[in-house]
Each structure stands twice: as structure tokens, then as C-alpha cells.
Length: 411
Ligand SMILES: Cc1ncc(COP(=O)(O)O)c(C=O)c1O
Image (cartoon, rainbow, N blue to C red; front, side):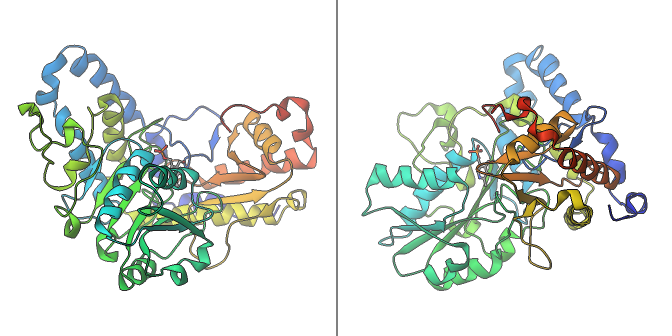
């Protein structure tokens, strides 16, 4: 293996002090923060406090006294500064899938006689499924999903396209789209744009306001470390607010929920995207998880993530035992996310063998191993150890052991 001075990289790491904020199991190298971020110590303490004091002792008064009712907004504002959004445009609620339903339906109501939702063939399935569900619900005259290759997106924005639905960073290969360029092109041709930030929020610089983005969604449980099933966030550009109503009209999106009015009247602004009662334990965990970002610069996060990724790749590519792993992510100066994917016919088995040896990565069907490089809790030494363990597994064909061939429900 090529000798890379990972000790020097760790020494120069401006974010190294953040590693101690996490409490990962001894010996675990967690290359899966792009799927489920781990909790900080602070999250554990805060959630314990919500359980024992706020819920346990203060009970229902906590909706007012501990600000529970405002959490979707306060957490949304904490996320806003990570995605380049000014105040009053980000709210935290529901899942990405549900928020996409609300947003895409709103877009179609705004885009008049342009029924096409244009997306990428390789976009994350839930984004496509939600669009297909709307098409089935309201009919193909009013909604039609059209899928093209990533490189054909701009040239496919024809007069019938009302909205572009795109992932900023592709979940499979980590390729990144040019948010500013595509948003400008879409606007020039009369279409709205919805960006899915699941694989970029919290790890890459995002400038929603500056790019003039119309709508965006993102995950709370990946790089934001908000916990399993943490609520998603959504962004609605100020310029569009007040021009439409979204269809999931729940009481929390009413202008005055505690009037218990029998007719719906949408709240003004982004709050109309709320639907039902906010999940306080999950929101509280995400709220606490976001505190770690208060004193870090997103450019430093992106820089370290890129360096972790490139170090991993350089070590892997200099190791003869690893030649059968084929890089499926873009390389070089092309914009990329904080992950790498490699294909191999035994990708699933390799992932299981890595897991057994303390290196957590994930498998993406049919043949990809995906490694995520979260900059807040990974050291360069850990990256080198992970490649060393992968090398042993490949050299000795440990992945061929029968126990690694048993498919689990969640891969
Ligand atoms: C790009 C992308 N969008 C959406 C989702 C799913 O979002 P949710 O489960 O919150 O609906 C994921 C999950 O991994 C994802 O990677």
C-alpha cells in the first residue's frame, strides 16, 4: 500500500477536536454517515432530558414551556444556515417522501399547463415513486414524470416541463449536479426546480437563495446526524410563498390550529407545509445534533470530506489486492459528494465481511459498495485502517465465507 502520511493529515485537521463529541464503539470505523449519522454525546444527554424532565415531569405544558410547538420552525432555522437560506424559508417535518408530495403538487399548481416533472433516470427511487403516485392520483394530463440521463437534463427542458426534480448529489455514485447552472437554465425556460439535498446537506456548501432555487428537501438522518427516521427539512423560496397552497392540509399547517375551525385556512409562509403533530423526541434529537455545526464552517467540512475521500481512493488504488474493485464514482476535478462507490460481483458479501471486521459501509443493489466520508467523526488514520482491512478481506477472499452470503432485510 502506498505510504500516505495520515498522521500528518490528522495533525493538520482543523476539525479533529470534533471526533471526541461522538461516542462510536471501540474499533468501529463508520463509513456510513451518509446513510445514518451517529449521535453526538450531546444528543444523548438532550434526549435523556426531554424524556425525563420535559415529557416525564413537565408533561403537556412542555408544548409551551419547552417550545415544543415551535420546534419545526426553530430546527428549520438551524438548518437554514447550512443550506444558504435566509430566515422564514426552511421548516422541519415529515419525511423527504411526504415533503416531496406536498412540494411537487404545489409546483404543478403553479406551473399551469406544463404537466411534466422532469427527473433523472438514476434519481433516488422515492423521488420518482412520489411523482408517479401524483401522476396516478391526478392523471397524466395534469402530471407526467419524464426521465432522462443526467447529462440530458438541460437539453430536455421543453415547453411542457413544469418542474425539474433533481438530487444535488446522486445517492449511487456521488456525482454532483451544478445547482446554479441548472436552476438558471430551468428558469430561463419557464420551469421550477426542486432539489433533493439528502446527500449534500451538512457536508457540502449549498447556496439555495443565491442560486434562486424554488424548492428543496433534505434528510435529517444522514450528515445532520439527527437519528433514525429523523424528520426531513424543506425549503420554499420567499418569492413563491403565498402563491399556492399545498394539498396535505393538516391542522398544524392551519393559520390558527387551536381555534379548531372547521374550515382550513393555510398558515402564512412555509409553516403551511406542516401537517400533523410534530414528533418531539425525533425533532429534539435533531435539534441537539445540529448544535455541533454552530462553530464549524461548511467549507471546512467539505474540504475535509474531500480529503478523506481522496485519501481513501489513493490508498485503495495503490493496493494490488484491491484492483477488482471498480470505481463507479466520478474522479478528478469533477464535482463530487462525500462518498465513493465501487462495483464488484461480490459487493454484498464484501460489505458483510467488512462489517464483521468493524468497518461499516453499505451495499447498494445490484453490485455497489458505498463508502461515506463524514468529516465530523472520521480521522485519516481510520481511513487507512479501513483500506487495510478491506485489503485483507480481498486478498484472503474472506468474503467467500458462507455466512456473508445471507441477505439481510436492510442492506
Ligand atoms: C436522495 C434521497 N432522497 C430521499 C431519501 C428518502 O427520504 P425519506 O426516507 O425521508 O422519505 C433518501 C434516503 O436515503 C435519499 O437518499
